[in-house]
Amino acid sequence: MILQDFITQTKTGLFCSYGNFYLDPKEPVVSAVISHAHGDHAVGGNQYVYCTKPTMVFMQHRYKKFAAANFIVKEYGRKFELNGVQISFYPAGHMLGSALVLMEYKGARYLYTGDYKLEADDTCEPIEFVKADVLITETTFAKPETKHPNAIEEIKKLNTLHRNIMLGAYALGKSQRLVAMINQHCNKKRILIHHSILPFIKIYEELGVTLGKYEAYDRKVMKNNQTDLIYIVPPMVYHSYFKAINVVRIFATGWKHLQSNNEIQLYISDHVDWEAILETITKVKPSEVWTTHGSGTALQNHFEKSLVVKLLN
Image (spheres, helix red, strand yellow):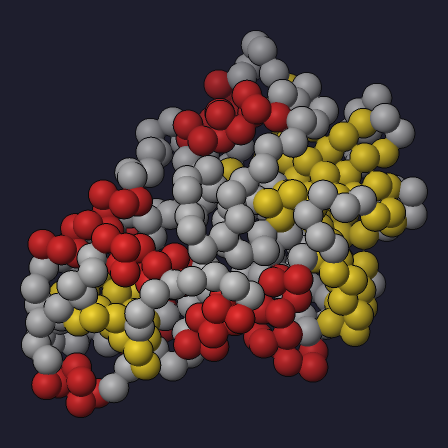
């Protein structure tokens, strides 16, 4: 039987009272089950953190000694128990180490997605679908009109430009995916990396991910070479250099509002779009869908007569 209060939304985040743990809490708690290492899902300071090895390593780099008092690292597919709730992780395809969280309690299966994507990505584990009675899905882009274009075709747009490019991208996950894609599909380009992104790239390589060629940003290199350089920078740097000259400004994201003032739009997202959410529902075969991290209203309307959709936030 599905327990309607198995997961509840609180000011701290999604809480499982039956297991006495939080999923991706927004502030430090005693027990945190963390799906992946992005800052809006993985805060520092928790007492116990249950996660994959890459998530632990990224958190330790970002938060140093304040990452967590105790990390309990779990491999994909291996069950563990928290206060009677059986939990196991499965690849979510969002970034390296990202996990779907399957929770089993009193005969019902609840699958929390965290952030996830279905597109192929050589820099992380591909998503592994798991059947569940309840799918607890993120709804960042859950609108019928939202369709992410093919990421490979998007990255190939960079081949049409010979001027140097300032490419804005999130430091963890997106930047590493872009480095690999540029090496594969824009191999005449020379990649420069902002110093704040380099440690995450090194961690990816230490964890066995091959990204290809890149080099640390050097002002002289950028000044002396006027063509075919791509300088990958994090959002804060990208937005602070709004008056930068002699470069084409591009930001890699699925968000339209971040594309509007750029010369070229580069729609590369690490989240599911509308069709991908529908495909996930088909594969997971849930009796109910609970939505979080965005608006689930469109899903509720779409499945009005065929599937229970509950909005958690």
